[in-house]
Length: 202
Image (cartoon, rainbow, N blue to C red; front, side, top):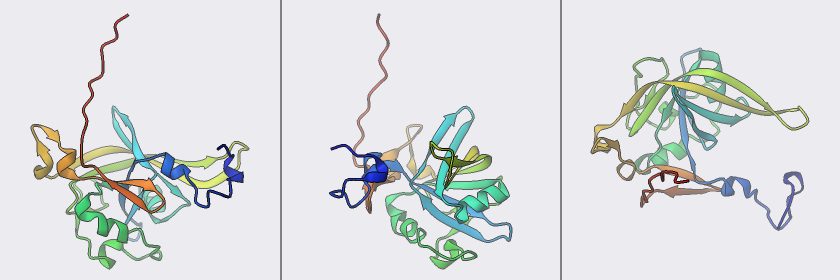
């Protein structure tokens, strides 16, 4: 099968692209508005974009609350979405109106960040405080704005629960991350397979 995205084959009623690009880590993003209202929402267009300094990005299809708050205040927090918090994470994806705090509405406990004003999810196995470095409005191949926006932030503080550190490593099996697999599907990590990078031998 081959198709171009704007003319998807009718035998594919649901867009498969998000399922093909999977699993994707979930960026559970907390922000605070200029009016001091805390916001919390998951984004499956999320990833790390650099290590020195550490940088994270999330993309929003439209200037939704998290993107707007991050652009306005210059900060956001990435909260680790794990199996034990999957219901709270999913609840926070609802289309709550502007001015409603998902923390309060869904009784998700928040904790103060150390460096920035935006709060974090208190029970998250990890959280990273970020300061915004770039706000990019994307365009298509013809130069038209798509409506999507990419927020890139530099990690300025890292929180990790002691319970998920083993032998000096953040243990993914203990942390139990939830990933997005496309459609309404989510995945859990149940097994790790370690592969070491080989030395090149010419």
